[in-house]
Length: 245
Length: 306
Image (cartoon, rainbow over all chains, first blue to last red; front, side):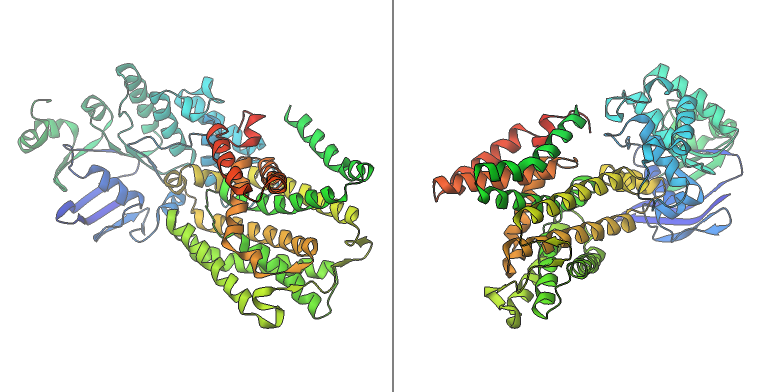
């Protein structure tokens, strides 16, 4: 459902993406791992449409989306979560998700009725908050949620746009061990319903969730394979896994 | 609590003409009317500044367009007030749409500068209109004629302005809490996130900017009737600054803030300038202190919620 060919992006002399070929199948969770500075977030940015590649093609659901802006891609079903938490801090958790629900309900050129009194927005938002485990925190301002809860909200907002493909940029970043375990369990339950591109440093999470893993080093994909084979791959061990595997 | 304050405010404003006539101080009715008219301008700026995060430093442009629309129509003998209002509002909306279409593509300090530059262009255009008094401006030939309503009567004009202000506040509040306004507020809060969930902020912001311009034009049409005199000074950049200050002083992104800010600024200006001709030396520090101590503006003193 997602096909990337020859994706290239440079910042000055730095080749952050260097001819990346990448693919996500229907229902697949495809993890992207690599050392710091390998170009993972740059890669996600190009998939989501916030960064324009210098060369290459991105085809999503049979359509060439390379030239489309981020909002258009989001409406087509490409949802992302951010590595650095990005929520509406002065809105409540429920309102955060309701805004995202509203985004997938089409245009918002409606000028009179109160949006946050609209059951057609609040009910789905409430359901999603329950799903991610924030049911008890619906009316708390996002700014007052704990870091882990904000990460959950981040994923909830991505889900609320009813995506076909989720781009998750380090959903476990900065989480405690217990929170991470809960997030992994939750993502495992999402796996059944969504295709996912998972960028993550937590190897435990990657090996438990991924159907396939691509290893990104200096902007290049040096291997794409099943978790078992990646674990056994000599080149990958040298380049990245090293002491961790 | 909030509702009670609103009721008290509205009752007080409605009763003001009676009090003023009992005290035989007609000047204060004029001052109050000026407050109401500038409050409409401030409400309209708050829509884009407070709720939309668009720091427009050119809101006086719409006061000018509204004023010139009324002034020029009256000059040519068209005194029908409803028609004048329609032209003032429509004209301001069109100009706002044009200015917005260019400026909203930028952000931060560039947005401030572009809105300022457009307004300066209009200011100099006003100066160059010799037929309409150029630099000196001109007397408004006749006040707008609203049929049953006589703007020459200070009390009727006052109530007219009051009704329009309350309508502007109500309309703006409906707007910012609607789905449309939610997108505007969301884009201010976090633009990257808003784009990531599928909203391109541009058309929403442009429409908000246009609506704000239209409301500014309404204020301008009232203002020229209030002063009975039309000058390019309506569009001077210091005027834009004053309106912006009303919004900030009163509390950005609040229902009552623009009215509170307009009242505080204009009344202070009036009181201080009657004491001393160096009143700005006192007003300046007062404003600085108020911004430091009331971070959420004057209306933030009464309410805690967003």
